[in-house]
Image (cartoon, rainbow, N blue to C red):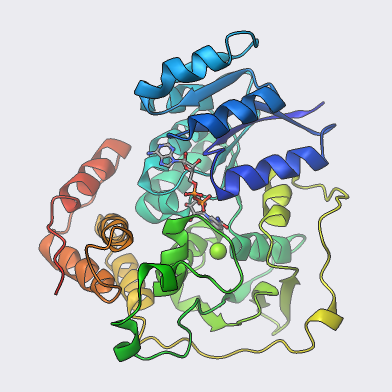
Length: 382
Ligand code: NAD
Ligand code: MG
């Protein structure tokens, strides 16, 4: 039996790599749903190749274009945000891959779980914003959330066969991003193009900027704490510029297990989609000959304050991780549009965390209400 998957965010970096995984495993995986925000041309091209049951284009003004391009295919075309939520719950879907960027992924991912669908989760923002709600709902419905993020997939792989053994700590590796080793004065001068130039990974623009500010590691600490039920004081970050060791687990007896591989998201995507099986593929292999040195250093928490901000938001709990995430999304967007400088990103996040009062959202609507409030805080260039 093929596993029938819905790929939400099929036109992005993770989405397109997920389709490369499907190309390798045509007897095991079947694309049932493809969904994208606005890249109608790529969505149409993907639909013609993978012949899903349904496609969703979120931007309603692009619906006619997609419909007319697919008129002679046996594919249903839907538009709008609600359709993303509806398709994730359909009977013909066995598993949902959320590869949407940002808080926009929260409602469809939550609904998928509520409808009992296992979730392969790339969209870390969903767990950052509403980790308590997501994990409690998954537990109540008896469905699993499979990590796609490479660090979390590495930890998940290290934990295979160890689920009853006590964990002493999780060690998350970080490449350090394009500005590793630089000081605050340098960061004031960096441009959008400098920040978009990641040394090891080719990713969507939002996560690439998060990797440059190190907010990505902050978000990943929160994500790991929810996924593996480990408190954040037992989660460490180590900078490993080669991005070969994807993360590590230290057990109660002192043993440390690591997962290694090339910096290539296709492996973690495949593992989430085919879990618990490991399937043969033709993706490039790691060789020690190409990496004679694997090196490690401590993160520079002062120059890159975003990790500390994320940990602080998580310690406060309630709406604060949602505030952190929304403020970060707004600031990254403003930076990408040239409206604020690189070092204004953490400043805007701090400003929002002090401006928005503490609350305890409990439903998706309540979290999205907090998100909307944060988006009203003006982002200033100072
Ligand atoms: P991307 O920008 O390349 O793609 C985003 C996808 O989401 C696109 O298909 C787009 O159509 C869709 N989308 C955007 N806004 C939407 C909205 N409002 N509603 C519905 N769909 C929307 O992003 P990406 O790099 O593929 O990242 C996706 C997620 O995976 C992010 O949460 C990111 O943190 C996470 N992630 C990415 C990588 C990577 O290597 N790219 C690695 C680890 C985790
Ligand atoms: Mg990651």
